[in-house]
Structures are given as structure tokens and as C-alpha cells.
Image (cartoon, rainbow, N blue to C red; front, side, top):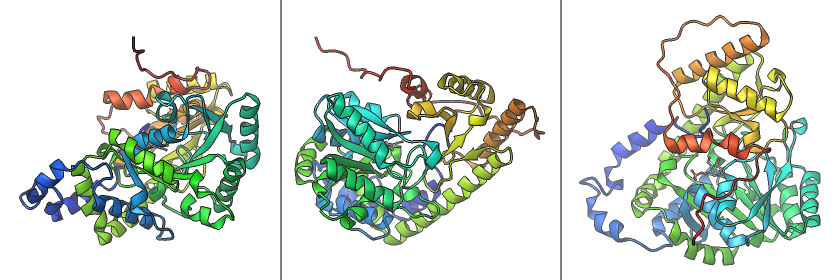
Length: 434
Ligand SMILES: Cc1ncc(COP(=O)(O)O)c(C=O)c1O
């Protein structure tokens, strides 16, 4: 439950692959293209791929905005895209503001190799963790007092870990803020199509046109197919910048993290099938809604609430009332109990730099229905024990156990230790050259 993967719609993609053998260069129907694709190495990318991605991005945003294929830069997932944009915008020592709680791997992606730094903007549960201009001003002014050069603000919308979409007014105030300070705004919209109920997703690409004198040179979107299509292994990341300098320089740098031409070729065909894309997006959001509702209702039965959410592949679960100590040490004690005794790998709020102890991100879209029910039973048993109201559990036939591949283990289980607010900022693992 620590991995934000979307495994709910693989069957739809598999069916499309069976019906479209020409899309692969490894079939007798598609092998004619082998030579051309195997040899392709232009770092602008296949034109049909960029066009298909631009159309897909527009479709995900309800067709309300259009994207220019010539502004699309490729990278190895949103991970590479986030690093690429930082290389373009920040010098070593420069800072980006980031509302907390935030995606823990931002520290790795945005800082490790660029030597930029992150400055958290504290958000609180009292207003459902909304970003306020007061909080932005406070973080910005404090950085200035400390002589730190603030180069920009990065937001994730929809939010990881909150699972919420940003309302139009908040987004407008953020665009106003970065214009007033003349700093960059990077919007990581990797979860754009995981929205499963109202309010619908509003992209910065829509809002920027509604703001008078908005400097579009300051606005950059990060996108990826890892979450919306559930293809993190394909490593398709996108920087979409409205700034010509970033597009030109970023394109040169994107040669370090291009998407394989075989993947581009396949996805160009898949994403250009408009009927498929429409059906996929509708079905994916229907399945996410059903899973989210099943999971949160299961938690409500033992009075566990989550932050009200409408997007993402996770819930932001509130276990504050069960904390023995209302501190981050108390949270770590509770987390250890959950992982070692309850046998659930949920991620504590401290790993997202949350300012309040007792919140957990719980992923629900990387497993089948049976596994969700096992998880719910374990959580209910845990709450029963903690509150002295034992829950009757039917024995469930299951051979589920914790198993991690090494990469997954690193990213998720390690993160609480690395990213806890009490630990120093992790240093890059790069070995010094001698
Ligand atoms: C907000 C956010 N940005 C970026 C990433 C990295 O995604 P990718 O697999 O495309 O590198 C993730 C993955 O969890 C994420 O949640």
C-alpha cells in the first residue's frame, strides 16, 4: 500500500494490443517498421508521438486547452522531467518553494544532481491542506531574509499525497503570486486523469489564460504516462514549457533521457486511437471511483476517516486519534507497529514532510479486490485492538505477505527514515570524483 501504481486497467490495454498487432515492431504485422524505428535517434522525438501526446494531454483536460507538439520535451518519466526542468531553471543553491505535504522523491529528483534546494510551504489540516497566499508569502519572505535565491514554486495538481484537485481560485492566486514575485511555476500534473469525481481537474494551462498580464515564460507543466495510463515501466515523461528558452535548451538536454523509439512508436498508435482513449479514460476513472469508495467506506466502519478526495491512487488517512504521543516520534512508533505487526506498508506523513503527525498515505490501486479486503480486515483488527473494541474477523484464505523488489523497497520503505523532518536533508549518493 506504499506504491502509487495504477493497475486497474491493464486488461483494456492488453485487449488493444491484441487488436492492433501493427503497433508493435515485434509482430509480423509491424516488423516492416523495424529498421526505421530501430535507427531513429532525433531527440525531438517521433513527430507522430509528440502529436499524439499533445492531443492526449488536451483530452485529459477536457479539450479546453490545446498543446503544441513542438513544445513537448521528452524525458525518462516525470522523474527525469522534473530534474530536466530544474537543470534549466535553477543554479546550485537556488531554491524552489514546495507546499507540504509533498512527494518525497522531489528531494532526489529536484535536488540531488542539480544542487538546488526545496523550501517547504506549510499547509495544515484546518483548511484541508489548501495552499494559502499567506503561507506562500511567509516561506518566500523567510527565504529572502536568509539570503536564499527563490527561483520558483513547484506544485502537484492533483496532489500526491492528498488525492485532491486544486480549485480554480487557489490556482489563480498561485499564478498571481509567482507573477508578482517573478519566479517560475512548475506544475506536476502527473495525476491529471486519475480524477474520479467532482470537482473536475483544472490545469494551470487553463487558468494562465484567465489572468491579466500572466507571464507565460514562467509556466511549465510536467506530465507522464506512469499514472494516468499505468505505464511507469515505459518511462515516458514530458516537460511542456511555455518558455522558448526552456524548450530550446531542454531539448538539447533531453538527449540524456529520451524515451525509446520503440515505446514512442507503440504509444503513438495507442494514443491516436481516439475511441480507445475516450473509453479508457472513462473506464479508468469509473474503476478508481469504485475502488476509492469501497476502501474509504471500509475504513469508515471503524471510524477511520480520510481527507475528502477526488483524485489520485491513494487516500490520506487520519490516524491522529490513535497516536499514543502526538509527536513525529509517536507517528514513527505507530508506523513501525503497522508495518511489523499489522503487516501493511503504508507511508507516514513525516515522509511527505507533513507538518502534523498522524497522517498516512495509503495506496489502493496497485492490487486486486481480494487484497484490498485483506488490507481492510487488517486495519479494522488493528483499530479494534488499539481502541479496546476487538473486531470479529472471519478467517481469510490468503497467502499474502510482504514482498518487495529492491527498487520498490528503496523508494517506499526507506523514505520515512530518509525524509523524516527530523533527519537532515539526504545527500546525493554520488561518489566524489578524485
Ligand atoms: C507527483 C509525482 N511526480 C513524479 C513522479 C514520478 O513519476 P515517473 O514514474 O513518471 O517518473 C511521481 C511518482 O510517484 C509522482 O507522484
